[in-house]
Image 1 (tube, helix red, strand yellow):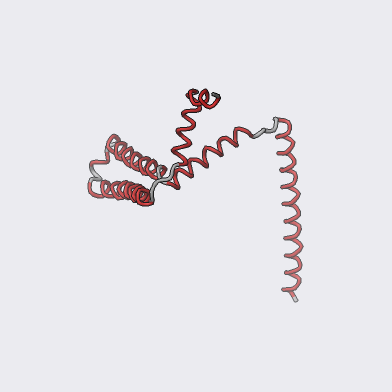
Image 2: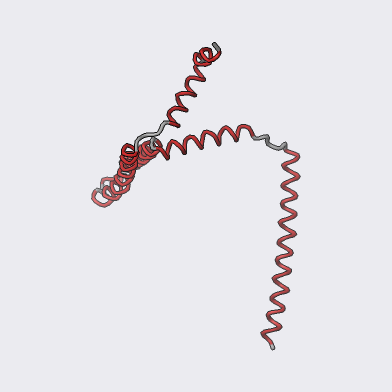
Length: 150
């Protein structure tokens, strides 16, 4: 009975649909086709931009036309990324991003006082280490200069 009640909850149902999309594997042929399509979309965006700049440079001096060309390139790249996210590796990346977001939400962040104390400690340690490195540098330069003067 509890499992039927959980399935009727729209939040759980949408999470299950997302999980099945992220965990479902597609065939290697479909995966390769999606990668090729994604790469072709990027190539069209790059060379299309180059071709339009070269052949129709006088047309794209207008800011509106340049904006439309830029939006076209951005649209093609976003479409290419969307296609790449539908591949097996893309789904794994989405799953990783989702799990990372869940972990970040679980983090207990320090309060302002603790943050201030740690920041001051890091600053003091950085200054002390910098001074030590400078002293080592001066010492070794003195030794090297003494050896070179012989």
